[in-house]
Image (cartoon, rainbow, N blue to C red; front, top):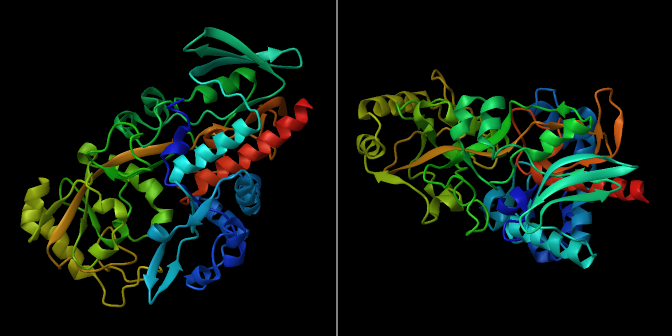
Length: 455
């Protein structure tokens, strides 16, 4: 019971959905007052834009039908979640800049569940219990097979030992294999065995291994995952003692990022954080020792996200580049050379964190494509970061109703998938907040179709 909620429990609750503007959003947050609404600037985020981002960020490899379904269903799913007693609020803290008393939202993400991921899952558990749903805790599904016109699932119960559960339909919603070091090494590569895990320690790929035994096939990017920059001192798995992920470090577009050799290795300003953070964890893992440092000067400190100010945050502060390098164990000569080359490459122009401002570098590799400010206003701050995996992109093939597909593309009667197990949406990268809405959308579809099937 104490471990329920899966990966959703650990999230900040940010959830992406398509809308035509604030009027649509207010159907999800009807408590919003007219006075609050009058201070919000929120660009429309049409379903076509959501789908286009899914296709673009997968280099055209995403399942177009599933991407279109997710985008077009997303607002309806949000309203359905509202009907199930989940409550939402505007994401002021991380997705809006305040200027002249107004909130300017950016990046297609504007709403979060109240109470973060904990609030989301507890509201849904309460709703399920109110509807009479029985939840068997402390049970691990180990196998499934046909049983007459339905299915039998073998489970290992902490209280009852081995037992079988029979039903007319089965929905596999067991997460990916992000918490399984052996599967990470097999599918993602040997360096991934040592990656930190942001969420639950129980997403070990059990459902993904069971699906082929009943005819299901793999789909999606089994060599890819969502992985971010996290505090180098973060625990091996998600910390259930605190709500949300307090260790993430997402303000890197405002500064520069260097490795243990004092060298930059990625374009910090390639796009809004929402569209790069899920792939930059991998870039950090590939660096010497799997370690990097996010560096900021006083021009941007006031813009850093809340997680940088938490007492758990690991940081070093210094009045000079040389002292900063010494504080983080990097060669001072190397870091000074990196900063000097970067500063010389920064073009003049207006800095605007509310949009891709085009304020970039010229003549340095890698470039910084937006938000490039000279790193020259002490005292300087450094935050050591490592890679932490959130979830894996590899899943199983499903149709628009969430039914598992076999090798011939035919649906397997009575077997469904939802959540991280749905394969074909994400490849190598991911738009922030798409995971929760995908889980809710395909969970809803699978549940509705399974209910119709057994009736």
